[in-house]
Image 1: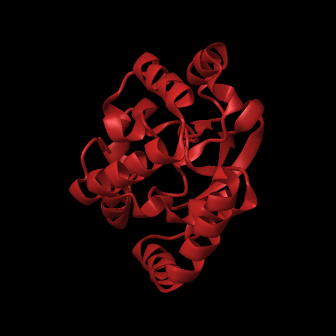
Image 2 (image 1 turned 180 degrees about the vertical axis):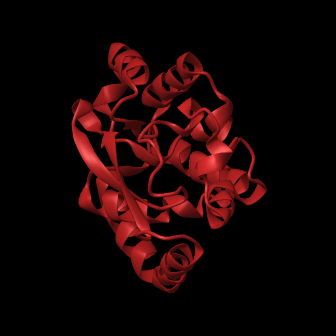
Length: 186
């Protein structure tokens, strides 16, 4: 049932939001040189790598590491990128990954290919069995502010409590967090 909902929501979201997606793609191109989308190498279900699209929020010469690992993250973020990150609008192209089956609407956020510490702890906790999500339990409980062990604890809690009702609670919490910009450090 979860996969059917993902397919319907992914397709419906892409169609319904297509004017917004096209407008944001154009705005990103006008804001800074480079493509509108950044395809990030991420760790998916079973620790398999996949390419995940996001609206580009950073300069094209930014090192390919998690933002918190950059010495001066503000130096790399584009002017529009700050807004896109704070509102989570940069995440909307991931509806394609949901439709394709690399991701789900709700699950642990996909780790970057080089976040070995996060991947190892998730594997140990059994969380690697889940399809990564556009949003997740850890996402609405702190986002960038959470240390990795706490993210994994929340991801494990999601694994244990997973249900359509819990997913709905997380989606509603995500909307509230995105509207407020809460938990975004860069």
